[in-house]
Image 1 (cartoon, rainbow, N blue to C red):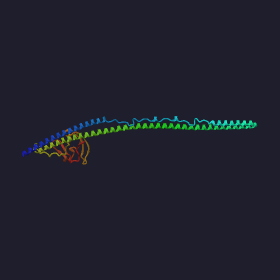
Image 2 (cartoon, rainbow, N blue to C red):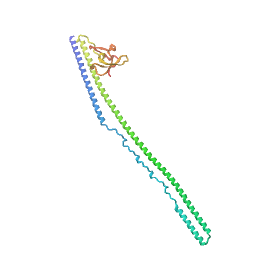
Image 3 (cartoon, rainbow, N blue to C red):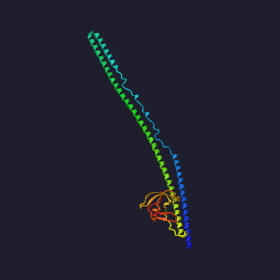
Length: 332
């Protein structure tokens, strides 16, 4: 019996030491993983900076827009009044007058030769005068018609000049609007492109930081689980040794795998954050001794839960079997 007890004591001691060593190595691996995550975060940030510095510049596709209003020319100076230089057709009238004079002279010669009376010559002279009056009236009518046509031509010229000036003004206004619109669209394009680029960089940086923070947090969680497992293993080994009589007494059963250190006196910065469906108070807290874990955790206080979930060990603090209550123990 003594040999069996001694073997049990040795086995318990080996188990306790093995758990402690395993916890130490597990914690070391977690710390190395955290350092690798931090190094990766630093590397990614350097790579991001390099990518940002080598990106092409945002351009304004409308910066070379030309003002084409100078291509529109005022052509009104090339217009002319086609009726401005109309002349009176006096040649035909003068020929008609000369013919009347010649006819009158011939008639007078005939009268003289025939010995006709002076009354006949007078009548001929009056007829010739009347013919000349008709010629003069024809010239005056032609002049009146020419004046009317000159007025109409001037009116048409002024109308065409006004139309040409309005056309040139319309081209200038339209071109001014086009260049202003192109300038505004270019500025809007540049602003939106830069805004999207900045948003993309911000989102990318946030994703990188979130990813590395998650990996760091996972490493810390692994370290916490390693330390907690070591403590549980040591407690289990010591319990086995105690049960074998190494400490002169009977040891309690080893704590279950879901047992966590939850004694109020081992915690600080305790804040009530809610209640479970069964009415158990849920707290956020930190461990005073960081060997139990770093950061903020969620859990209960061992002095506020049913006794069947509280585990008493040979230390001076309590543990809680979270598998028996409706509260999750986790890091937050």
